[in-house]
Image (cartoon, rainbow, N blue to C red; front, side, top):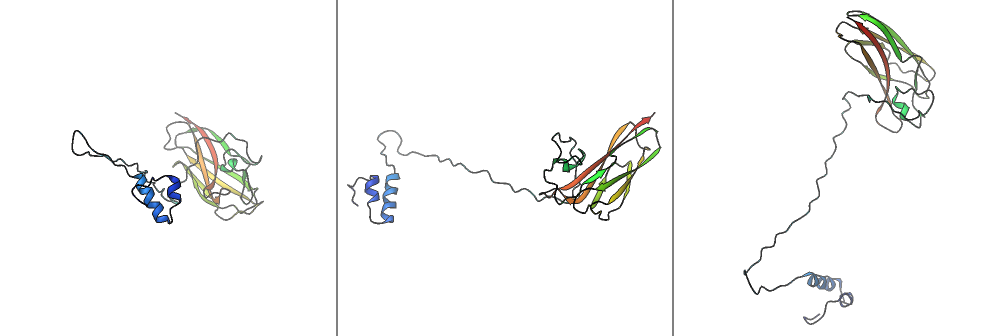
Length: 204
């Protein structure tokens, strides 16, 4: 290759080695110019586009309290046995999971005076094809619960006793009682969560 050669693509492709071809490409990429008027030097500013650094999401904290969505789904449940108060209401495949079927999920304690207590025992049956294990039951400070954490096999029944104390209440309310299972949603790491509710009218 001489200084008189024209560096066309055809000429470069016919060079003997890849090293010569790359050298020719580098010459083609070079820009030369001559200053004939004005300043004796030119300052060229260079701008670079940088990728935004990717942030790594922290691992989920399994000790964090699980919260049930306040809004309930409006899609059609997978089976008639799935109540809208269950996160399984979203699931399409119910194989390998327990199904907590309650005879009653909502209770009205009616009118109560400040300081009154009310009790109700919710009964349920495991209509799924896996053992049901309750991890924890979460509710407000006015609510205490009594239940067994022993596994409940398919077809077996269980009870959850809820006691409401109105001592610190100042108005009528509807109270959620969330049951977090050790069992997880199909294909996910999130637990199955079931919800019960009771309401009362506080007399003043």
